[in-house]
Length: 67
Image (tube, rainbow, N blue to C red; front, side, top):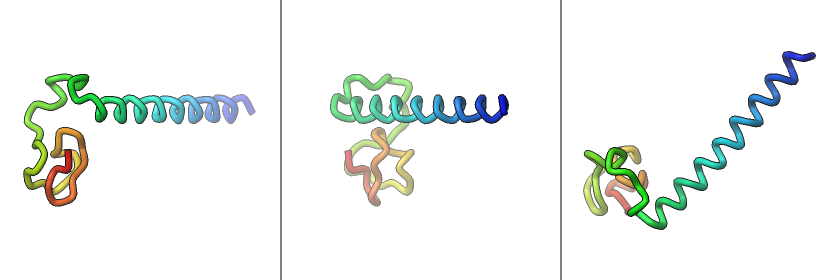
């Protein structure tokens, strides 16, 4: 029973952290100056060809980086 409670608490904590990081990502998309230089090093900019979202600076890929 204690193990179940601990596991439920851990899952809830992870869910809250995921929501918090998603909000931060959306906030940084609105203001690109908030992104760290390390995060954008080597990423592709708007209009460049991409195969996966992780290649783009803001992680939006539809054959080309959207942002």
